[in-house]
Image (cartoon, rainbow, N blue to C red; front, side):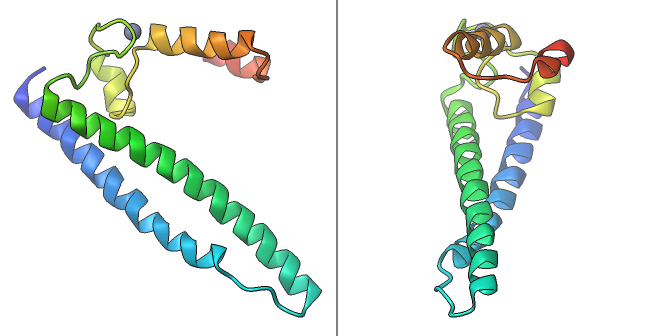
Length: 127
Ligand SMILES: [Zn+2]
């Protein structure tokens, strides 16, 4: 991979990292105290659930991005963690934090399927 390509992926990752970092203000919502009004309380609970699930998603993605940046430091960025082959530029352009090539990602998802996790069949048709 060329240095300029690598730099453009680094910029993409750092931009995403900053974006997700801002998402952490959601923590304020989680801290909301109970209120005497039942409607308010219900509203706050669903807001809190939403904030918690998006925080979890953010922190997973943050971890992936940090690991991708770390792989840049160690010179292994763009190599699949499963088979050591290069991840295609097209895939990295869409998911610069991808740590597996499509074949390994597929295999992992099939593995999840074999363990009984439900996946919408229509998703598999289009994937
Ligand atoms: Zn692979």
